[in-house]
Length: 118
Image (cartoon, rainbow, N blue to C red; front, side, top):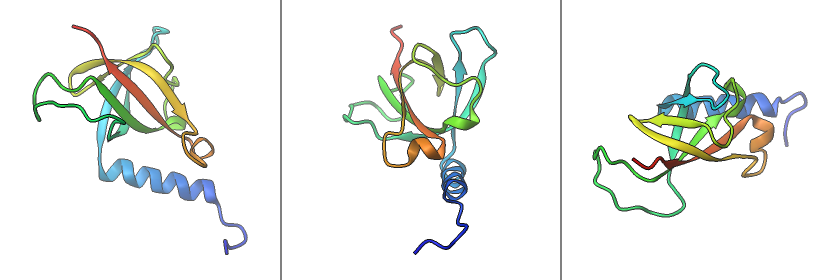
């Protein structure tokens, strides 16, 4: 039973921030609106489809999924923005807010990135 006065949103935010701190990664958001670049904290997630690549290769992978605290980012990422991750540029193809139960309410999202063609 959840105790009276329990702040579920605050507990979710605490847990998400602990994950972001434990497995740190960052990406630079380049908003298409022309606003200044923003460095965001993220966790890299396993993509839906496995991809062959050489670990540590400068080539990187073609698809990257990043878990972020959406509510902590300003300006908010949107489809069409560009992100730099590990020195490689990616197009933001989708922002998934609420991909699982409670994720939207907790302020979390997954950014789905696709590597820009060289």
